[in-house]
View 1 (cartoon, one colour):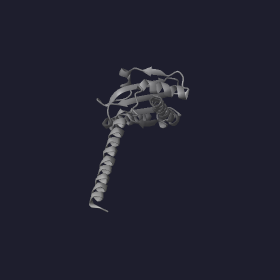
View 2 (view 1 turned 60 degrees about the vertical axis):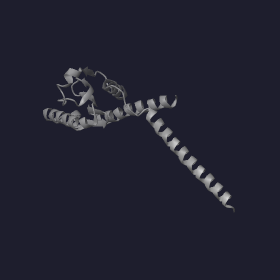
View 3 (view 1 turned 120 degrees about the horizontal axis):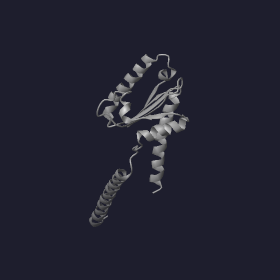
View 4 (view 1 turned 90 degrees about the vertical axis):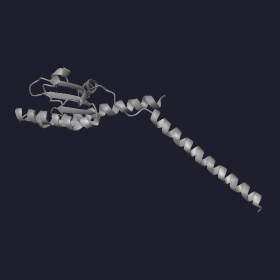
Length: 179
């Protein structure tokens, strides 16, 4: 083989390799760009939407909302931890139900809020030690939300909370993939 052919083969090989590297780099950049544009699985439900959806899933009746200002009568929420909250209670004797949901301002607020929730549940348990609802209280976390259920079927209410959030995420994915 002549030197001219060898040089041409080397040149063609180098050009092909450069093109492969360039195309790969472009494909990587496009892929990264598409990831940034695709919607994240961020939850945007209000805490009131979450609690009312749990109430519907659980078929609870006669629960009344507690105003945001009055939630502080129940929970000593540390400042700068919560951006949204909702609470519903039932006043029927023997079937007391409390459902509360808090949206954290950021992930670092999780520990102080959980401490406040646990302090409330401990105090509530010491005031009514025989209450099955308090004994069965359940705290569920699905960031950025913390959900508290005080009821005989708190575990089921916590699962309903997860279902509400998962339904919301799935419906977002469905509307995004339809576009």
